[in-house]
Each structure stands twice: as C-alpha cells, then as structure tokens.
Length: 416
Image (cartoon, rainbow, N blue to C red):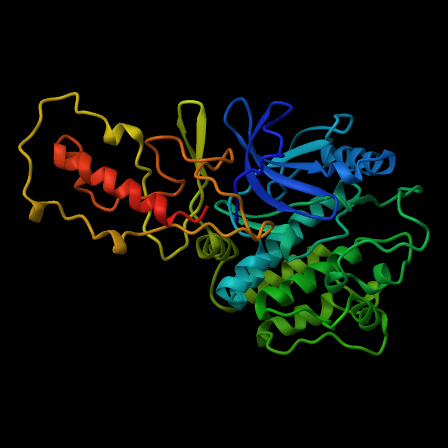
C-alpha cells in the first residue's frame, strides 16, 4: 500500500488516533494511516470539509452503524468513529498490503489455483456478511487488500441491509462501480439480493486471472449499456480453461442463474483439488505469493518516521538514527583502514522511492508523520544501512565521517 506524508493542512490527531501519513482518497474524503494510543495501526477515513453537510453526515453515520454490525476473519475490523465531529471520521483495521487492482497491475494475473483460492476465501467472507443481513454492493479489486495474513475485504460504505425499506439514495440513483456491477443493480432493480455480490465476485476473479473485466468500454455509460444489455456476454478471453465454468456461472445475466456463495466455494475447491492441491495449501500459497513486508514505525523524540514496505526486489533496510552519529560511549577500537570499510560509493547507495497515488506531487518532507524539513541528525524515512560493518565502524572517527557522508547522500536522493 502506498503511503505519503501528511499535508500541512491535515489534522494530526482524530479521536484517540494519531495520524502518520496518507493512504488514499476518494470522492467523499481522505484516508490516513493512524495509530491508536496502544500503538495499533488503523486506516482512518475523514470526510472532506467541502462536502460536510447534513446529508453526508447522515450517510457517514449509516456507514458507521453498518460497520459496527460487520465482523469476520476476512473483513477489516471496525475500531472507532465520530460522525458528529467537526471533521467526521471512522477508523478500521489497517491491512498492510496492496489492493488486488494494484497487485495485478504491478505483477500480472494470478495463476488459476491461486485465483480459485482467492475466490473461496472471499466467497466464504461474503457469506458471513450476508448471514448478518448485509450486502456489500461494491465489491471490486480495489476493495480487497492482500495483507500478510491473507486477503481482507474493506469499504462497506455502500453496504445495505437486505431488508431495509428506506435508503439514502434517490429512487433512480445507481451507486457502485460499473465494471463490477451486476445487471440488476445497474438497472436500478430493488430490492437487491445476495446475487449482486456473487456477480461482483465473478468480475473480481476474472480480473484477478486475466487483468480485464467482463465488460469494458470508453465511458461508464457505455459500460452500463453492456452490463444491462441482455444480449451482451462477458468477455472471458484469456481466462484459464479450468476457471471458465465457474466464471460463466457467477457472471450470468440473470440473478436466478448464479450459484450461491456456498456453491462458489465448492466450485473453487474442485478447481484447486483438480491440481492435486488441498484448499488450505492453496490459501497459504496465495498469501505467500502476495504478502509484503509489514508496516512498522520508528520513534525518535517527538517525531515519527514511518518505514513503508519496500519493493519485492529491494533489500530489507534499517534506519540510520542519530545514535549512529553520536560520540562513542565505550572504549574506541582501532580505526580500520579504508580498504576495510566496505562502504559503497555515494552514487551506488540504495534508495527507497515512495510513490504517491493520491498526491502526484508530495510535499517536501523527510518525516512520514509531519511535513517540513528533516530534523537535524536524521535521514529521510526508508533510509538503509548499506553495510553490516556499520555497528563496528560507529565507534571510530572514520565511522562518524562515513555516517555523515551517508546522511548527506540520502538527503540529496530523498523522494520527498
């Protein structure tokens, strides 16, 4: 998951959560990485001040009430909220990993066995949601996070009680994502049934295995037309042969023709077992295939440096702290010769680039928690110790000179 520093106008604290960085944004607001008083990371969603009105507060309050009722091992947990605050916010479990859309874009489609494992996991999770009398209504690759403990479903902002008689949407208003939307949902049919989430799951699995959706077009209106046209058929080109029967069934135009979520789990198991693999093994392989390094923070005085997950090809790094540059507190060891330093030249030092999806031009900052200039004596977030010789070298004059040089190089190459 890509995280960028806070902007100067961003709040630093909401409720009991300290905000450390920006995760993403949408039409209604911004999502921050937060940390509870006990150090628990959280995704904190805040409504934009420009859209805070009575209707948006009502929608937000409804989302909070829905999240309070949703629970499950594959669902991001609700942690807290305040719909009446000046800046309404809610906090959910932070899942440290890319969303499925980003993962497929960066690494390509999943093999059929792993796609089937993903389908079984998500179908079981959705079944639990439906058992609580809820529909997700906006399941899509961007709403599935591939965390270190397996995939989790997020963003129940469009969730609705299946038996609710009153909705906040206008009579003919359709809310959701067209490329993953069931035909009856796109046509505005009410009430919706569990079949809309089955269709969305099918669209998600097709994307996971091929990199494309059932219906794609230049504009959302054209996609709506293709989705609702009874004569159009989903594009299954490129789908693994063993997944075609499952995808054909879950993407059926008629809700009545789609299998139940329990049947989806069974079909996914059949695909997996046909490859000589057990479902539990396939789930573990899925997590191992998509997992990333966990989030962690390093405290130094009053500031917080966030060390975000590094690209898969990068070498795990360690922050160089001011302690590495302080005078030694133990007896000084003999100074090694230059040939013993084993420190790469400045232009070969590794760097960590932090890309910003929501903010193309992130503000200048070397602190993952606050904007502004770097604190004296500390490098930018994500800095890395280039040599295991550093623990010994730190006790010599040459070590301090080397550390100063490293710090200058990292500061010059910092991405923000």
